[in-house]
Length: 333
Image 1: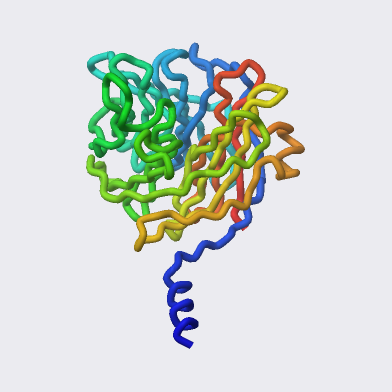
Image 2: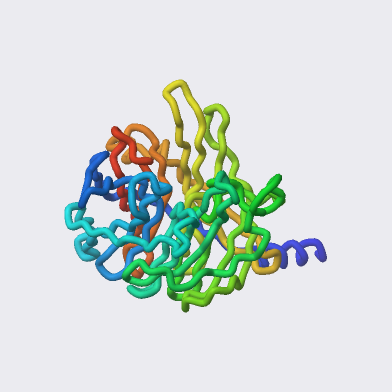
């Protein structure tokens, strides 16, 4: 009897995770190597919608020109993305012109308050660490989030602290209802290899980190060689749970292979950890496969309506000459 009561109490204390069904409704494509105002459209790594605009960060590590964000119009009534009405928002380079920008994610809370994540470049000398910073509608950098020291790689010598190279805060999201932003690492810290970390702060534009959560290490789901699996992006649902994209990159006989899944996850307040369940595999969606035969490098996710029943997933084609830029519309059933 006592055992039953204890078990019941434990079950009630656990976060409840629904298992929503994700249904693909539409696919839009912008052809590979499409240029607009002398910039190639590609490397789309994160997205965020506000009003009738969707912002897409272009992740080119400075190889394709000025750091920039692509803007497209979206008609929520018709669920239609306009892939021909294009604009660029140029993000101002750091004042010292030396700090390396590798923009991966963005979260837009208002026209004048946009949060950007940069993975830096740990191959530079000294190492250029990760950064989270606020920009305004002109692309000007107005404030930096003060990250705990454990995320900042030591500048020289053997690296003993900080993010791994190119595995910084890949996922970035805003929950306007809760007044929070969240950022999650793609891979574990150098000194903490057994977990990923998500941090949160105030959407008001403050520069402090308020919360920290541990996220379980993603398990590789493919069959390639030299596989690595990590988190690329996430959104908060209407219950402040998460929908997370996990991506694996490996080598196969046909070259690079991407294995990507979506997971639902819930924050456990008592342990400051995140529990997850992964039920959607991009490789097994027959509707998607009929339109896009190979699994692409799906990196970004953002909500398309205030009810949080429709979301978009985008691909980072790494400026490929053959892979198109993909925009997938999903409905939550």
